[in-house]
Length: 454
Image 1 (cartoon, rainbow, N blue to C red):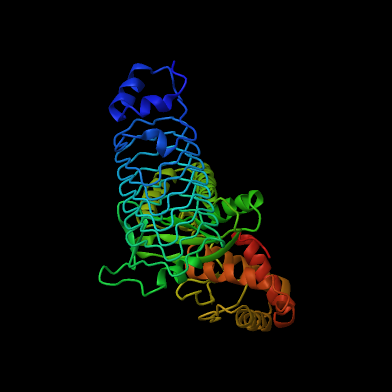
Image 2 (image 1 turned 60 degrees about the vertical axis):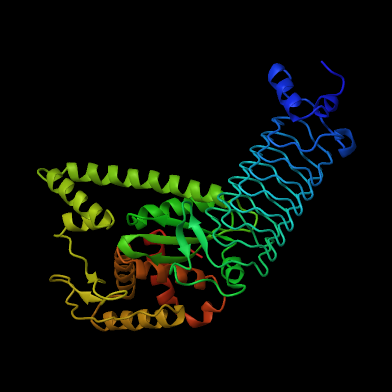
C-alpha cells in the first residue's frame, strides 16, 4: 500500500482509475488536503473515480472534473471554486462548508448529499439533481438553478437571493422563515415532479419580477395535504387531533375544493418543523382512521338483516362520486330524519323536517357569514326564532349544533367556515362580540364535527 495516494493521482487519471480497480479493498483512500502543485502534469481529472475518497480541505479550484464519480466522497471544506463539475456524481457526498462558487455543475447528481453551509453562489447548476439533499444554511445567491430538481431538499435558512429558479421542481422542499427568496428570478415553477402542477398554471403566463418570492415566502411555514378522491371529514379531524398531539403549534390555515372532487387542506406549522415528516404522518393517521371508520360502519350495517348488499352498492356509488362515508349512514337511516336540514345553500337553509312533536316549520337561515361576529348574530337570531316556537334554550342549542356538525361532514364550505370560527374564538375580542348562547352552539358544533377547540 503506498504511503501517499497523491503520487498515484499525479501520474494521471488513467493510472489512478486503474489502481482503484486493482485495489478494491481500499474503500476510502485519503487525498485529504490535496494541493494543485501535487498534480503537476495532470491536465484534468475528468472521469476520475473518487468514490468514497477523503478529499476534505482539497484545493481543486478551477480543475476540470467532468463526469467524475464522487459518490460518498468527503469534500468538506474543499475548494472547488470555479471547478468544472458538469455531469459529476456526488450522491451521498459530504460537501460541508465547501466552496463551489462560480463552479459549473450542469446535470450533476447531488442526491442525498450533505451540503450544509456550502457556497454555491454564482454557480451554474442547470438540471442539477438535488433530491433529498441537505442544503441548510447554504448560499445559492445568483446561482443558475434552471430546471433543477429540488424535490424534498432541506433548505432551512438557505439563501436563494437573486438565484434563477425557472422550471425547477420544488415538490415537498423543506423551507422556513429564514429561507431567503429575495429577488428570485423565476418565470414558472413546478410543484410536482415530471413537470407537474406548473405555477402559474396557465402556460402562457409567467411570474412578474419578484412574484415567486412574494408568493412562496408566505407558504414557507405550511404543509398542503392533498386528497385527490374526496375526504371523510370525521376521519380527517380525528386524525388531525392525533397529529396535533404529536406536533406542537399545528393549525388549519385553509380548506380548498379543487375540480374533480379533490381537496387541499393547508396546515400552518412551526418554522423548525419537518414538513415532509408531518405530511407523511398526517396521511398515515388519516388512512388508519378511515379504515376504522369503514370497519365500524360495515359492522353496524351487517347487524341489519338484508342491508349489507345495499350498503356495498351505496359504498361503491359514493366512492365513485367522491363523497364521504357519512352520507351512506344518512341514506341507511332515513327513518331518523334530522330536525334541521342544512343542505341547499353555502351553509344551507335551516329548514325544519321534523315530524309531529316539535311543531317547528320553515325556519330559514341562508348564507351564513364567514365572519365569526356576524355568524354568531345569525345563530342567535335563529335560536330566538326557535324559542319563540316553544323550544327550550338548551334543546335549541343542542339541535342546531348537532345538525351543523352533521352537515359540515358533507359540506366543505361550512367545514371551512367552522375552522375559521374556531380560530377566531381563540381571540379575546370574541368575548365581547359573541353571545354566550351562540358561543355554546359553536362550541358544541365544533366538538361534534371533530374540529379542535380554541
